[in-house]
Structure formats: structure tokens, C-alpha cells
Image (tube, rainbow, N blue to C red; front, side, top):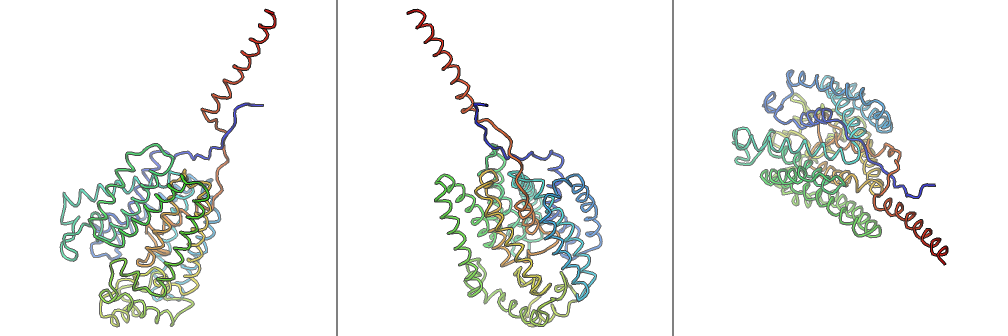
Length: 446
């Protein structure tokens, strides 16, 4: 019998540097950094932009083949993804624009498969770290655009003087930098000893969020980083404090959802958006009337806001301004896929929350609590942006990655000796042996 006590080691192997580089490149593509403003300056889908994504799809399939054994272990997430994609694809049969629905469904499938791969391969602390590195690269690139090419990096007309970095407009940069900041905070809270790059990323991301003056992004940043800090502090306070704080957070989230459903104006004012000025409540009311026309089917996946969409034109005439989207992920999903689509996505989001919540006692410390913090940010973001069941979109991609990671079984623990314990156990037999020999000598001398 071994005298040294074994401790479980659930550490995940870090993917090689070249694989991390490929993943970072795809993450940058999913945010639309620089690619959109260069190849689609009018924010419209173009044939050239579609061709640019073909190599990304090919690389994604290659990564899936390379890591097939790990991706298959995330089979519950693959089943959920398959059902969602099949629903979106089936909507082409009643879509007001079947061509757009078909193309966007293919894009949804490829970006979602990449999300499952990301969650299955970049487990433990590695998911937060690769996202942190992506955020740092895009943050530094945005600073280059702001100071080196200000006509691209700074708004010139609408929102003049506010920073937008590598993106079309400031809110996009704010949301991407928020994700980078939350990932950086998770890296600092994890058991990874590398601290320099996460600290730099957190500083750069916070600076860029402040430069956008986007209250939504700032609130998401405070919420995400605050949850990481709170969970890290609870670990120091013991399990009893952790349970109390977690359930307090669940109750607080439920209260916030209730307030948003019953009094949305309060939430909008907290986000710096006055309903009387933005007209969002008017948009939502008009859209819910369209939902009542097709409550079980919607108007087709990603088809409602097309350039030639007659239902969208009715909304724009009714609200008296060119509405680009619902400005609410759940209502946008209702007009696309009806109540069945919204309910199925809602169950998916709940599954991501439940798996993340129950993993906190087991894996939260070593992962830096990234899953729970990002989930809170995503939920808040879904109330003001169309981020649910979207193609080529970083927020939805990260949610699916967290879901895949949560549904996978933990790796088999490996025996690991604690250095201080092993030294103690190894020295005790020697001391006992010396004591025994010493006692025997004393008897002989007598």
C-alpha cells in the first residue's frame, strides 16, 4: 500500500499553438472585425462576403474531423443543435424569402458546429484563455485603427467622435470587448499562473468599452466581471456562503426578468435608452401584432428583415423610421420561427444555465467561473440585441460552446501527489526507522 495520498487531477491538455491560432482567426471572423466594413460597407450581404466564408467552413470541417473523438463526446449538444437547425431549415417551406432562409440555415449549421467543437476541445481554463487572446488581438487592432486610421476607427457622422475600432459601429466593439474582458477576468480567477496577458486584456477591453459610451456594453461588463469576482470571493468564504450567494443570484435574476416583462421601460432607462426617444416599445408592440398573424410558424428563419420584406415595411411605416431589427432577441425569434422556435431556444438557454450552475462546485475554480459570468451577460444582451439562434455571431457561438462543455462528462481523474504531503509521508518512515534503530542500540548497550 502506498503511503502517499492521491489527489484527483482533472486538468485538460492545452491544444497546440497552431490550433489556437486557427480558432482565434475564426473567432475574429465571427465578430465581423474589419471583414464586414471592408467587403460590405453598407452592411448588406454580398456575393464576395459569402465566398470569404467558404474557406472558414472548410477549416471548420477539418477541425471537426481532427477532433472527432472529443466532439462526439458532446453528443447531447449535437442532438440539440440538430433539432434547432432542422426547425430553421424547415421554415423555408413557409418563409417569405426561402433563399435567404436556406443560406442562413447553412451558415447557422457551420458556425454552430464550430461552437460545439470549441466547447468540446477547449475545456477547462482553455476556452476562456483562447477568447481572452482573441479579445486582446482585436483590442490592439482597434487601437491601431483609432489612432492610425481614425476615419475607420472613429465615428465620423452619427455618434461622431465615439470609437468603433474594427467594426461598423460602436456597439459591436463594445459587446466584443465585453466578452474579452469577462474572459480575461476568468483567466485571472482561474488556477492558471499566467497573469500578464489577462491583466492587459482586461485593461484594454475596459478602455475600449468606456470609449464607446455604450451603457449596454458597460452594464454587461460590470455584470460579467462582477460575477467572476463575486464567485472567486465566495470560494474564500466557504461552501455555506457560496450556496447562499448562488441562490441569491438566481432569485435576483428571476426578479430582473419579471421587471423586464412587466415594466420594460425601467430596464431600458437603466441601459440608457429612453423608450419615448428610441421607440422600442412601439417596435415591440407592432412586431407582436405580426407574431399574432403567424404564431406557430413565424415568417421564416432570418427572412423577416430583408430589404424587400413586406411585413418589415409595414413595421417601418407604422413606427415612422427604418427599423433594422427587433432590438430584442426573443421577439426577433418569435417573428422568425413563432412560439415553437422561441420555446425550443429558451429550453436550450436554460440547459446551458443549468449545466453551468451545477458545474460550479466541481469545475468553477479551475475554469475561472467563465460560464456563469458569460451566461448572465448573454441573457442581458438578449433583451436588447438579436443574438438568439444567429449565424456567424459570437454571442450565440459562445453560448453553444458553454452548453457543449457542460453536457460533456469530466475527464477521468489522474493520481497526483501533493508535494507537501508526499514529503511528509516519505520522511515519516525514515524517522520511525531511525527511532527503532536507536532504541535497539540503547537496549544492546544496556
